Image 1 (spheres, rainbow, N blue to C red):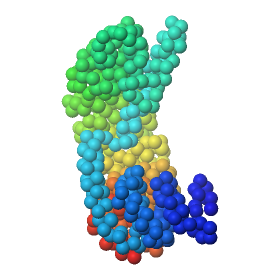
Image 2: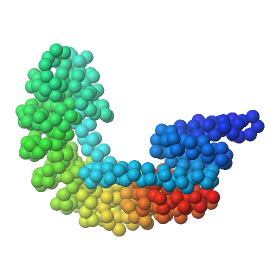
Image 3: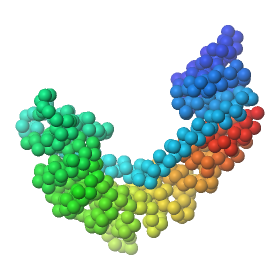
Image 4: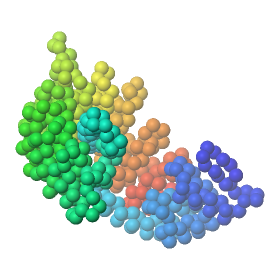
Length: 487
């Protein structure tokens, strides 16, 4: 027995049965990390027919715990060189193809309706800041009244990374007795009328997470009449529910509200509702005197994705820098405002923003977060200039690693043969290999030809990595090349 790091390897030899080795290696296929599974597949390949028999039984009985593990078993079967591999690959690929088709259709619909991960995270950060503001306000109120014990848990719920209705329901319904009639939703709607601000906020947060349409009108009432932190909670809830009945009041609060969290939260809510007619109002807030509101308005515009905002967003980025002896606009120089404007331009995807975003990405005087966001945004713009700039940054070893990573991720979004070849070339790269592998699987049939070509490599580990990706793609065209590669 040989121990390397956290992995244990049982080698064949005197005193160790082939059957025991096969069982141990098969367990590593199921329980190891990616590297350990590749090694186990190679070792099973050396054991030949006995290992193949065990693998065939496992594959045909559907005894593996996931499709991913089944892919490693198919790779191990290929490594054994067993004659049954061709038929088993063909049968397995029919299932993989059907599964991938359903997954790809679902992912395509999500991409069509959704926004990039970077923008989503930026919007969630706004929510988190508003929830912290509400929690701090409740903490101050409870300190004055001496009931800190009752509110500590609620404050933790507001600051929690994971948000769902269940964490708020106990606080919202704390004044209701166990025997009181009505459903949970009915009680939450009733809790919106509570004399206690914390209960009203808890009820709003729960109903927002539940996307409860019946809560829209009473929450609008809270937004127009309540105290600032309760109004801020109302903006989150109305945005989550996404009902257009809230549009007019959100526009008014975004423009005239006394509190910057309420104004910023109203902008984010309008973005979530996705009302195109709100874009001019959001563009107007790009000149707001509060950074939180400018930044939130930019993100909301990106979420809606309207080309009319491209010019004013570029103006933010241009006026936030010193140029031609003119003093920069200090608010537009703020990193949060600039990052939000950059992300918004990426979501809109206009080629009119290409040069500006390239300039941001390559400007060493820009904040790192802003440059990284620019690299990500360029990946959403279908412009040869954007692709060329991203490749140049990727190849520049002197560029900050975070920006190079963002450039690589951005390039991996582009679905064409040239990108596929670039990704295949990075499979053995310690820095980008894992990202390249994931991107090639997502690329699917477009990646097949460059991957088949890569099966000719003399590097056994790289060959196995390539074969595994082809198995996970599940295109029947690759069966013969895989069999030939492992004969």
